Length: 310
Image (cartoon, rainbow, N blue to C red; front, top):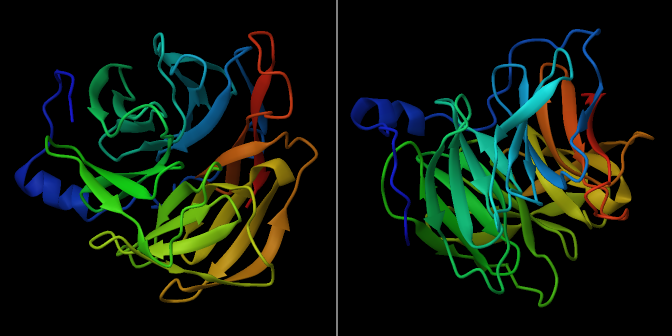
């Protein structure tokens, strides 16, 4: 593991203990006003895939083109580049912590931490070799930010709000790695805060993973055979939202208490969906970014994000 020097003092002691008790799925308490825009543009050629929203009405969207991060005011739809990225950088999944640190899945074997208030690059962790790996998504659970690798049966745990070593967590149990396709993709914590839910995009399965041992238990699906093309995950209580990108829908599931069974309750579709990849919530809305994977991925291609009612 290599790290870039940090110009920010990380948390420790009692502050870290309090931080570890929080999870990334705490809902925003404010209610989105009806007059707020339900669609907002991104710069041409942005190549977005991830979106993160915290307790304030701002969305953070990463760029696969440059690794940059764009911040949009949900009240107005206006935004600007927060973090400029750089040559060879990629930003895919993002999660915003309570202390303002933005954890970014960097695809090319890295995890990056950016200060959401200043745009400063705080720290970069080397998780694995760049070749043959795809660091895809991230969630916050306990004292770590957990990253998926879509091309390897391993999760990576980065210390949250403090210096420390990265933990590599091999997936065992029911998990089997399918070659030459994306496997582990979206990730969220379980309702009890003790486990991780990971979606396997191909062939479309959900798993409950023990973050201490890596043992993965396949979640039984009721009401549908699979969650094929499952990408980003978002959870509110026992309700799990699965963004199924190329199907242009979000499937909504009710989890049982141990999160070993998920029952389909409804699906969300919208004519504005254009291969949505990831979702985040503010108030009574779900915000999704359109990656437009079936359209030309050029510097002139237009991109946006849209909001739908929960």
